[in-house]
Structure formats: C-alpha cells, structure tokens
Image (cartoon, rainbow, N blue to C red; front, top):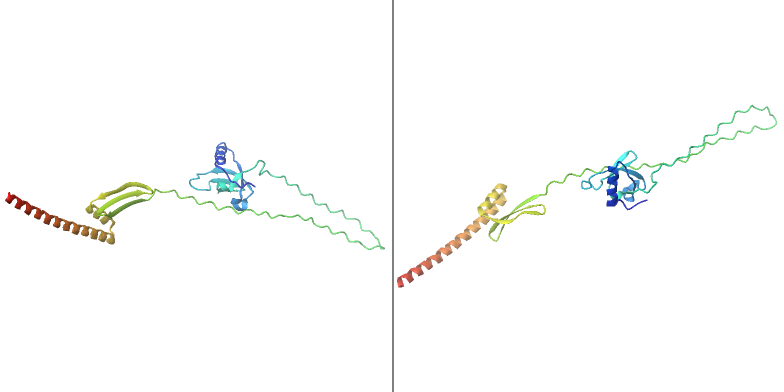
Length: 228
C-alpha cells in the first residue's frame, strides 16, 4: 500500500494525462480512511486555490474529491479484475431404485445429502466521503481609516489589509471635527470637543502671555526713543 501521497510532479503528470483523455489510476493511502488500499481513477483536477481536496477520484459509482495526501500513484497491474472460479454444479440426485422385496435384512436409510456450505464474506462497502464544501471566494481585504490625536496634532491614515494606502498626515482640527461628525457617535464627538476646547484654552493663554510680553517690549522701546 502506498502511503506517500502525490508529489507536485505527479499532479502535473495527471493534468497532462487528463488533457490527453486518459484517467490515471491511484491507490488510496492511510490518510483516506476506510478506502485505504483501494484503487480508483482520477477524472478531474480542480483548482487547488479553492480547496485542498482538488483531486476528484472515481471509486465505484461515486466521484469524490480528495487531497494529494489521500492518494498515490497506483502500481502497474493494480485494479485488474480477478476471474472468479465458477461454482461446481450440484450433483444430480440418484435415480430412484426399484423397491426390493427382501424380508431377511433391515432397510438401511439413504444417506442424508448435505448442502454444500459456501463461505460468504461480508464485503463492507466504504461509506462515501462527504463532498467538501465549496470554498467561498475571497473578497477584497478590509479597509481601515484611522483618525488619531497626539502631541497637539490630528493625523489621518488609511490601510487595506497589510498594505498602507496613506501614511499618517496632519489635518486641521476643524477637519477632524467634521470627520467625527460623519460618524455620529456621541461619545467620540464629546471626546474630540473636549480636546479642541483644551487646545483653544491653551492657545488663548499663550496669546495672552505673548501680548503682555509684546506690551513690555513696546514700552521699553518707547523709553529708549525718548532718551535718544
């Protein structure tokens, strides 16, 4: 019994044989379960990207998909039918003899003919494998757009799957607030408004401080002008 499965070279050879109209024979390996050691014919090779079980094998009246590990190239001469010997004809019953009129010996009963016993082996038919479900086609990778706030700056980034579509770039606070308004989530909007309020308060304080410093500088400049 083969147990190594099909190699990539075997699969390529099977595709060429199917294209030429031939149906290669395979033998089921131990990983195939109850049908291990049985012989089948490859009738089709489907797309391995859709399902791992892409080797369609005809076994009896069924055509079922298997993986390359479940089957191996059948050795030469495998699967040939063995001519079963015909059962010997049953012996015909002997012709009835004329009764003898014998008084001085007892009648001997005729030997009982035994029916020939035939050893019957119960051949268990393997249960057909459940056909593999057709794999759903893969859709496009997920898209993620991220609005982030750090170190006093708002940034936006976009990524699809593992591919970065847009690296983080700076946006104005008003643009960030408009983006959050589109989401229409109360908690998120409140958090953004709090951040903007804190930035506004800090900016007003800095402006007030700068105006005071500027007033001092202008007063000092006026004094210097008068002295000159």
